[in-house]
Image 1 (cartoon, rainbow, N blue to C red):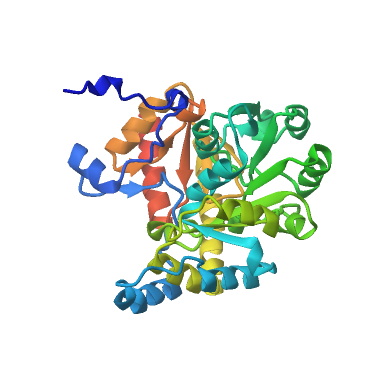
Image 2 (cartoon, helix red, strand yellow):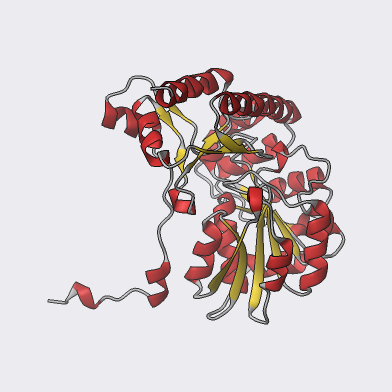
Length: 367
């Protein structure tokens, strides 16, 4: 009989750690015997999905016996119209995570390098390691500000991709428009992937989602998602906007039916749901301010955020407080995986959820 130990995976998999999502509500309820649990760990929209998206899904169910449109033509058209680009510059994917993997498959080879700020979204590293590429990490400066000069200095003749998550996950900080321009002008023919998943929440005057640089002809791909402000994380759909030559290269490695029918219908409808976007943005701004004020009252340091979450420093008892919050029915994201063991990342919830969290935290800190 064959020896299963002789079935060897690729060596590069030794460097890969599977993505670790936050615990779902049901699991915490089951483990801890809790009736009430709120989840402020995954940066979801607490107001729920776009109503236009829900209606589109309900109407599309009867067509599930058919394969989805492999080109996602109507979705491409809707995204292109919303962002002022050509349809050929848009590539929808099964969540933004898939697009990161596709970019890696299309542009990275063994021995290539990517430059990423640190800490940031782990999927950039994942995509690089799959292809046997090296990840060059550039730490943030004080206050988790992007160190643009250090990122430029990290570029070598092996650099194929620079990732910028702005607003950045998990810090909530962003790269100013003039710094994006400086980076692009300095690095030349290196693909810059600009992850703007949280762009709808950014209200700084000098913020950019990168699309203007695509329109100006720079080698930049803006990555966005329907999982955040549009509230349809459950159907998994994201998209990229770039020069059509970049999109064509990515299409060569894309699966033919990667975005399912309901996801296409939901996203096409959600793009035009401006009422939902504005309502969600306003609620998030109020929620962020509420959390800021609460943290200040509790004497906790936090990072001002342009996203729908806040990174807060709990100190040396960070892990213990994270676990204790869970015992009280509040799931947040612990920062150890990002090299931030004294921090947790808290998603902005509904006002009632925010108050529930703050009360639980207050009880723990003041014991």
